[in-house]
Image: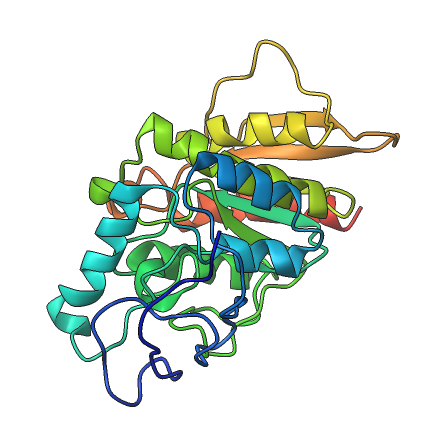
Length: 286
């Protein structure tokens, strides 16, 4: 669990020289939660231990952001920092796991699948710098959950309002398909994050079936009462969850993922996304 080795990269996201390879901790990338002394998980056992002992949300996100537990995902995300998309060839890629981002005491938690190869893996922020993020942040802004209608880079001044975003798998996977073993290895990061923000949560929005499946073990780990059998995923499906030790609950809402496959075909429209996020925000304000 030693710190990430390797050369140091410059801090600014876009200005300055571009280096092959991922950004290393403590080198000035905006909002980088880690330092050169942040412990690194190198296998599934390390992930379980480091997630359980983080102690604070800040330390947990730092540890998430340097994880190297899944060799296939590490190789892929770092390969992309060298073989950049042509339109981003002058930009430094983040090339590390994407930690949770947003309010430390969120009323609304938004759960996605995994970072995009040239979106979050490039910018260091989930749902930032790609078409899915464009669609999602425009909706978040319309519904009062984001300060700006776009999210393009870690230093763009964007801020979530009473909300937090996490991914079920923290590294960009090849073909956007993590393996079952990779999902299980990453699971303790989500479990620990949910425990740390559970008290403030009033609603959880799951973007897509993968996130819907991933949230149930995390809910159970956080002590929530979950129904059996688990309800099937669907857009607009709602499930009330018992909150440990409290009389009020948390509303879990399913939402189609804002992938281009869904948004370009009309399977997910802006009005449909607004309806889900407005419902979540209403729960946050109750």
